[in-house]
Image (cartoon, rainbow, N blue to C red; front, side, top):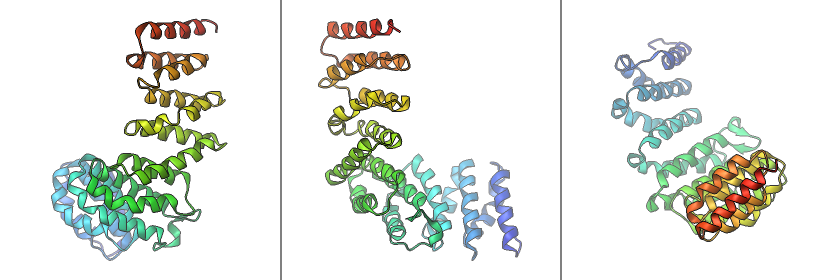
Length: 311
């Protein structure tokens, strides 16, 4: 690490990520902290990765690195910035509250990426740094959850991200998850719904699966919106892909309430098959509390069992 050869420094830092333990963090802390300001971006990036490892081993050293990793977060080199994004994501996952102040910085990073301010080597199929954009969206989701003030700072960039061209399906999916998680915004929720409709209507099974997975997450916070998709979700029952049908059952289960439970149970009972009978019967018992009355529920379960005996 004290070598004048930056390649040797990089090798030493790489080795540290494998060899460090709780007792040795203090020994290397100052050396790693110094290398966070090295003139070579690859060295700075490797140093950020070592800090990540150190904080995994002992989070009490966070205060010693706090200012240094904030500088790396605003580094001019995208590789250093990307490594720091991963570090911040792990920290924010544990406790978002100390990091609310970085929302403008994350928004700024997204604007720079979408404005093609990064080198073309970070593009993938014409999309600028998609993995870095996704990490930014994941961070914004954590920081905006239950926080109206922080959410307002990110509404515009999330909408821009969702509408940028070209855009890949993974990025759309992450945008929708972020919209679902943060303080609700009617415009963004409507935009997310449009993309979910597109996924459901697509012939690709992958797109349908993404739509169903998204609806399941949306049901946790925006159930009335999800109930509006009941007909489209039920339409997946005839899909030949078992993964789609199983995910459909999960979404129907998430949709169940006193208004929809009768229709949902009728669909589940009418479409029992050998491959899914266990999942469906378990689902029926889980939504028992929402049924109109006990006798109706018992009749539905009996119908399911009788259908099952036909196989």
